[in-house]
Length: 417
Image (cartoon, rainbow, N blue to C red; front, side, top):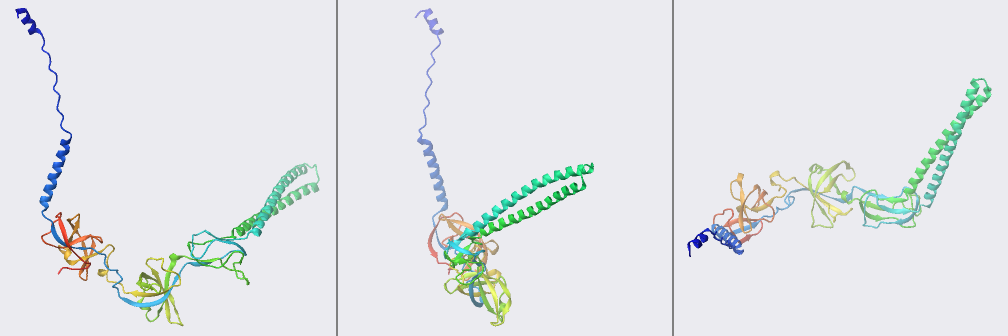
């Protein structure tokens, strides 16, 4: 290579090498890293929890019924009655066209129970409306005549004051005007009377539709199609009622209490009702009031007793026995939502008691508010619900979060020995 070729080679710009391609990480690498982290966390968690702890448990149960252990101080017998019942009748006399109800049917207020034949009532309504239209037309004609007589009277009065007509003509025009005024007032009164007759006829026509006065159940049906019905008895085969409706929400029990023991009963007192039809079923109840009068012949005082909760089993006129209860002491009355657990399940001092319940096979510490002792168990007023599992005994000290294994479940209201 000569000197010129060497200089030309040095003057040329060297070529830029191509960029290197970056290598991508495998897609499974992040997933694998996440799985490893979860596995390490679970391993650490199970390593810290230690082996499963063998425990004996019990199920928190609802306490016995509050009235089951309450003392009965008095009993009396009576019958189930409905404070709201009625025999539905018609307001007009007529023949029954159709009856829509049967015994045992539930009806609501305003429902049509029966229809009466309404030919006469409908024709009377049409006649009164025609008479009203005629009277209204007569009033319109009299008003037109009165306007004409008023103009005649005013013209005659003007002419009379100018001395162009006689006094007799003026008096006649005034008399005709005043007479038309009286006739118009009479026609207007007749039109108002005809309007009242229309309203009365419309009301009579509406009374051919017999409606339910309130919500209830039909307990008896008295009338059928083709029979005559009247709001009052007129003899023969005339019915005075369509059906009997009872409001089942107003059922209660009336009992006669011997006046020698009436001092044991007071308003609001708890009670129990046992129907002869269901001797094994006890209905919670309370005293509504004592009727302030006595039966001289029987020496008793009537007492009204209400059901705490009505049941479809209760029917009117059922015979019933009422047991009046002594009020339970405040400390012995279970609160709403209280549960019963074994005494050994409760831990800690009285002012900071707690229990261990099991959730997902692990211990959870729950603070509770205690009530009175109930036999071998303890009443818990707050903190637990019926059905939760609590620890009674354990093979080692308990701590929240520890894994447990149930080896025995105690029956309800059991205690540890």
